Length: 305
Image 1 (tube, rainbow, N blue to C red):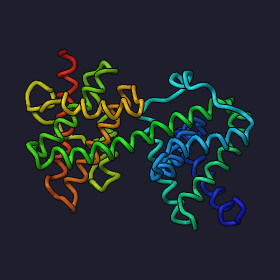
Image 2: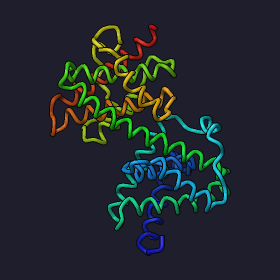
Image 3: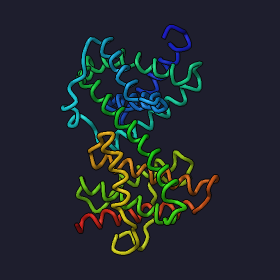
Image 4: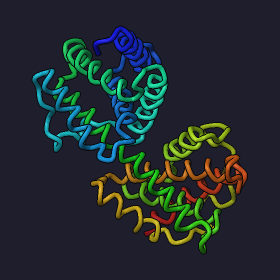
């Protein structure tokens, strides 16, 4: 942070973060600020072979600068917002990081240093003005970054598996999309007692839009005859869950809603890929309908267990 260019960019990013963290009433929300900043850090870590090691070093630096340590991780769960919120704000932060990287000579490496500087400056302000203790803020950022990194790693891994191991074998594209939706619904039903999963639809649609699919984020008007889950074909959900659970166990992601978010993101990304100009295997509207119909069937099947 020793060049005028980095200092000016840091000021600009800090202002963007504070504007992004304002709620509908125009009031600053410290939690949103931390989650979006965490999303920025996520983007700077994704390409590393060992993002967890780099993250640990970075938060150690911040802790040393502030002369504090984060609260223990066994206290973190009750402090965190939902995985759906973490995903949404992380993606907002990732967008800010990518745009900033284009303006800086060392790209995301410079962005990473700016994030550390902003954390050093602003965490003290959050404690003094908003009663957000620095140890708790650090823990929230650590947990949010870890979850967001896992979301992206899982989405990449699962999409590759769908393309390489299922499509072109004995699974049709509609089968894959329908069963992805159903598997998401099954994970979601493990935690939430609900007959709808609108927030999972938002996760799917947001991921699809980020990867080039046109249309509304709400995916309204896509109800099919199968949306009540009483009819339709969903191939073996357990087969997908076995593959996904192996990854979740490896990375230590135990929250069923966080698992559902990862699968929802995979469904959205797959829908965008297979309906996009490079593949163009299916109409976007049909891809959306299959995911949503599968989601409702997964919820329904789980409620019958």
